[in-house]
Image (cartoon, rainbow, N blue to C red; front, side):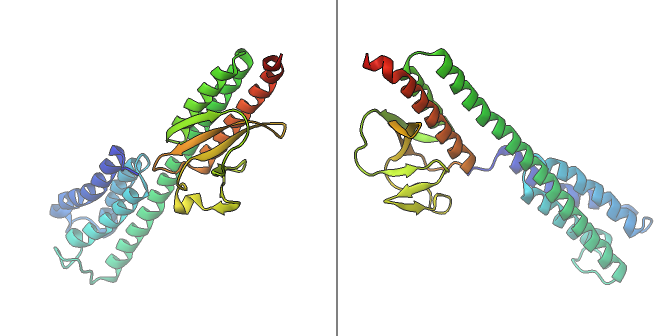
Amino acid sequence: MRTPLRDTGALGAALLAPPAVAAVLVPFRTDLTNATMALILVVVVVVVVAVAAIGNRAAGAVAAVSSAAWFDFFLTTPYQRFTINDGDDVETAVLLLVVGLVVSQLAARARRLEVITVTDAGYLARVHETAQLVQASGSPDKIVDHVRRQLIDLLELRDCRFEYGSLLGHPARLEQDGSVVVARGRWDVERRGWPDGEIELRALAGGHYRGRFLLQPGPAVPPLQARLVAVTLADQTGAALDTAAPRLEQ
């Protein structure tokens, strides 16, 4: 997976902001209490955590560690050394680290939950769009082609084709629960990636086979939610083909 630009920016801010603020406080270190200086650095952590909320957990953790380290280096005796002699300074540094870590991870988790919500809304939109097409269109071929394109985008496939008629061969199969089966054995797709070759996704209606999509996977393995949506789209295709079958046989 590539690192998004915002993640890189968050890591940069996490590395650079705490030492910059600590350096600014150097002229005042004899006048301010360690607790006050640590509080200022906590504010820096919170700012960086705000960046981490649109970045990732690593950015928040780096911000917390960086703040504690530079607090020690610039603002506690002996200065310009990563050493702390005073017990109160040790306590302050540890609290600064713990608070920064906890808050940063909470912010990163909040961002992750937001991404899941947006992603789920996107999945729902795909299912709704296909359902509308099934109701409005009398052309099974149009529905098949629409779902085929949806599957390519949803599962990040290299390609996808649809086969009508009887089952031939024994390719790997994407099951109703989102798992993958190879030669009657379950394949750990999260750990091992997609199996080699095409993967079958059957279009069923009331337990009756109406055709299958043959997926050509890309390098990325989509999450379980995406695979379950793919199964739902295939079922919608099966229902459309089942409805159209009497007309096509006349």
